[in-house]
Every structure is written in structure tokens, then in C-alpha cells.
Length: 223
Length: 223
DNA sequence: ACAAAAGTGTTCGAGTTACACCCATGG
DNA sequence: CCATGGGTGTAACTCGAACACTTTTGT
Image 1 (cartoon, rainbow over the protein chains, first blue to last red):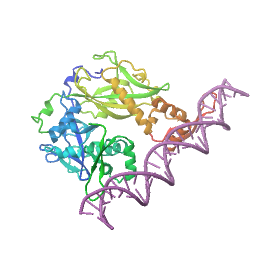
Image 2 (cartoon, chains in turn yellow, brown, cyan, red):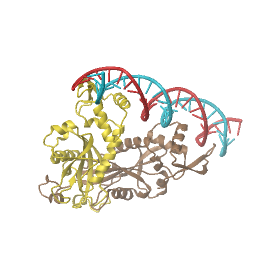
Image 3 (spheres, rainbow over the protein chains, first blue to last red):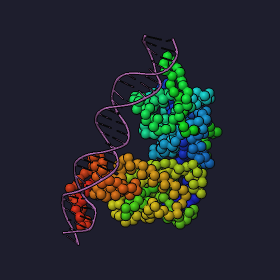
Image 4 (tube, protein in one colour):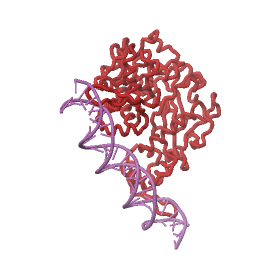
């Protein structure tokens, strides 16, 4: 590619860093934001928890790697998940103790409906406030992803990805409050959300408990 | 790292994608936004223009790779440049025709003063409106970086990175107008910028032409 | 009838936009 | 003295924040 390489062949023979994809998979359980982790069954970091990850194979597009990580590590159908590339971690040469590895980090949002549907989920879910001991630099990665998620969600509208097909405005508001970790004003929230014209009133009601039933909505953009 | 690998050793022996860093280096020349490119002297894409890039060596932190790309390809002192990671391109397996390559893209801002100072600049500068034929997927990368630059600059204040040490408010406004490709209101611009308290009136004046001289400012954050 | 969550408008302040004239200088 | 860009304030509007009561249901 460049005159700075002594020999053209070097690009084929040079010792290369490994490249991996790690996915920070968020969902909401019991009104708390959770991250999906798996317990390592090998060294290094045997017994510690880790983000679902996978080395990028030579003939694998990176999004495919991300999807395979979710599927193989977590038994989750990746087509039911929203995900987006976040950042490449590759500054620290010893992030991985085995081999120099650059990690492309994706974050993903899984809705609660999907989570309960897929019986074969292999993840263990941890509240973002009570994370276990983590392998590699995965703690920093999660912190970074979390800060980013908060920032984005405040300005865009993709919290829908965490919701089931049908939901009430109060449920949606709870999701926002959980992620942002702050109370929101009901009237302002509804005004703002409805002005986006992303929700469809599906003319159904959800009755639960001794109070007025809530209108059900669904997100207009189909997945 | 994972039970999905048949043998532990595979991570050492498996055929790996190559990882490169490419830098989209912006500057402003003649009131137009320009990108720094170099002409390829080898196949593939011999004679086409390309972003300064470099393969990530096994023991090179990725920011170091980015800096080396600027230095070796462009003869530019990377410490005089502001840069930030943008996105990893690795979806298309044939981006690079020689070897499967994942590219970590950085964008960088070079101020005009630096540009003129460094006599050994090896870049050719192209207006973002008149780009030449580009190698690989570098056209898409530049488009992506440009959209991102516009978005960020409208909400943050790092256009300072494109300015010389001392500049007038009109010059700064021109930089914003050039990047955003739209006229801004002089009074509103000044009000907004000065309220950020990032500028220091250095009590000097710049006289040029038959009109009132302009006050010179400098950016408070030192580089 | 009462408890419990759903649903609904208005006011206030802050920040953004639009807009026009005088100032200082060189030629 | 005039042409040129430098420099300044105010009014209108928009957007987000604060805030309280009525409605509908189950028990």
C-alpha cells in the first residue's frame, strides 16, 4: 500500500495484530439497565465475566462477526437486536494478554419481549450498577458504552429498540428514566415523544390493576 | 478466548485480516475546505489519490499508527494536528484488493499556519467539492468524515483547531461558514462564540486594506 | 366510594433568530 | 471623502421546564 513498507510482501507476512469484536448488549430488566455477560471457561481470566466477543475471521464482514458473537456466545438471534458500532479499542498493546488485539466494540439493544421469548439465552444479566469482576478491559468498555448510550438516547429516539412490540407511554417513559437514571415529567415526555410521529396508537388498551387502562402504542419503523 | 474456536492455538495461526489506519486530514485553503491526499505510486490504484494510511504494526498503538501515517506519508508533524477516531470500515471484504483489510479511520484538522510553515508537506490538497479519482473506498470514507465534521462543528467548538495562533473573529466566522457551507449572522456568531469564553482578546490589531483594523484573538486552550 | 395510574394545557424563562446602523482606516 | 470591512443591541420567536387536576377503572 505504501512506500514505507520495505517489501510489498510484507503485508502478507508481517506479524499482524488480532482483531476482535466485542458487543455490549443492553436490556432492561426489573426497571434496571442490565448488560449481558458470559463466564469465561478458559484462561486468561478463567471464571471472570466477559462481553460476548469473537475474533474477526479473514472472510467475515465485521457486522457478521458481531452477530455471530451474540448468537454463539449468547444463543440470541441477532436479527432481533439493534446494534451499532461504537469505538475501536486498540491503544493498549496488552489489553489481551495472549496476543495483541484490537477490539471493535458494538453496543446492542435487546427488547424484553425477545429476551423472555428465547429460552436458550446463555447470558447472565448484570445490573450496570452491580457488575461482577470483568475480564480484559471490559469494565472500561462497558463504562464507555454506557456513557455513550445515555448521551445518544437523550437526543435521539432509539430507546424503542428496548421495547416490546406494543407498549404504553408510561412503560416507554420508565425505559428512558431507567437509562438516564432520572425522573422525567410525564406531560413533557408525552408531548415530546408524540411530536416525533414515530408512534402509532394501535387502538388497544392495557388493563392492569385497579385503575384506568392505558393506550397501547407501537413503533412505526418496522425492524 | 472462546469455546467456538476449535483449538486454542487458532488465534495465533488463523489467517487474520490486516488492520490499517487511514486519516482524513482537513484544512482550509482559500476559503474552501480541503483534504490532504497523496498520489499512489504502486498498484493497486497506481496513479490514483489516496488518504494517508498505514498498516497497524503488531506493537503499535493505533494512535501511533495514525500519527506515523501523517508523518511518513505527508511529512507533517503529527503533534501539531488535532485528530480523533471516527469509524471502523470493515464490512466490505474487498475494500482492498490485495488482502482483506479493516480500516480504522481518523479525521484530523490542520491549521493553516502549520500548513504553510512545514515546507516539507508532501500532500496535495483538494477541495472537498473537486475530489480526484480516489483509490479503494476512500471517496466514501471522505464523504462520511465530511458529514461527521459538519455535524460536530455545529455543536462543539473545535473549529479552533483549523485556525492559526492569532485570528480575527471574521476569520473564525469564515472558517465556520466554509465548513458548514452556509452564511452565518455576524452579530449572533460573535455573541455565541464570545460567551464560550474560549477566546482571549490579545490586544493586537490586524490592519489589512482600506478599512477599520480587526481585533486579534487567540484560543485559550493551549495545544 | 376510594385507591391508583392514565391522561391532559398553560405559563415562564432562556436561548436562538432576524435585523440596520455607526466606526475606523487606506487610498 | 468615500469605499470597505469591523463592530455593536434589541425585539420577536421558539423550545424546554415547571407545574395540578380530572378521568377511568378494579375492588
